[in-house]
Every structure is written in structure tokens, then in C-alpha cells.
Length: 198
View 1: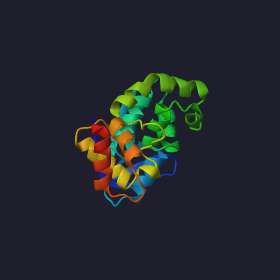
View 2: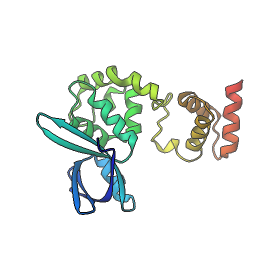
View 3: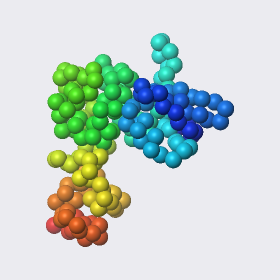
View 4: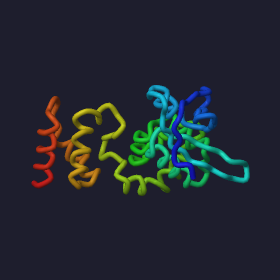
């Protein structure tokens, strides 16, 4: 399996790109979110990949990071979800946002993705919600790891607690309870740890 490629990316505007790797141009499909993020990144870019060999042919898919690829593969593990549908979902939502919607069983939001109706959304939730929760990617309550509310001090505090050995879900809940607007990361971590030990 090709884990990743490094090169200069060119985009075709239709969820596809060509990565120029030396004298070789590698064509692959990707989500529109992946394309947008790679377009903003300085060249050369690193693209994580997944090679699929089926009776219909050999297809290469590109991803901005390993997490997006992991979510894509989990979506493919659900019956009736193909690569086109999986990329459509990752084009509609960032990977972390998609995990949040699956984790909260938000059928209405998932149904906004192309090719995803109520029944397929429910099937996806039934099949991979528990696994995503085990990864610690599902935010607690209304917390969305990819949203603007979870950037800056809160995001740094969350990662600091995880680095100390706390479970990500527990850490997210502690940060949410301890956070006060404009507080420093030091005070946030201290407050979260105090709540944890209470």
C-alpha cells in the first residue's frame, strides 16, 4: 500500500487532483475539503493515500491527513457506502465534524451529504458510532473538535490533558466545565485537573 506521496498538487475542480512527483503525475480522487486545505498549504504537499483494487478497476484516493483517511475507511466498512458516498460526506463535513454528527446520532445533518438518506444515515450510525467513540473522536455533549469553539486555548488545554494520560472524552468534558472566557491555558489545565481530582 502507498501510505503517502509528496509533490505539487493540481486540482481539477471535481473532487480530483494530480500530484506531480518528480517526472510522474499521480491522479487521485479526494474530498473538496481535502483539496481546499491542500490548496492553501505550501508546496510540496504531503498527501496520505488509499489504493483500492476492485473488479471495476484500481483507484487511488488522497487525504489531507491520516485522520481523514481513517474516517473514510470506516465509512467504507458500512454496507451500501461506497467511495463516492464517503468522499461526498467528507466534502460536506470536515472529518471531525462528521465524527461529531455520527457520535450524536444526528441523522438530519448526515442526510445533508449527497447520496445519504435517512436510512443510510441510520445504518452508518448503527455500524460505526461505537468505534468512533472508542477513538475518542466523538466530542462530549455539544463539543465539536473541529468547530471554532474548540480552537485556541480550549484545544490546547484538551491536548495538554490527553498528553498527561487522561482519556480524550474525559478531558473534553473537564475542559468544557473549567473553561472561562479569556483564561490562560495554564489556568484552564489547572482548573480541569482540580475538577478531575474532586
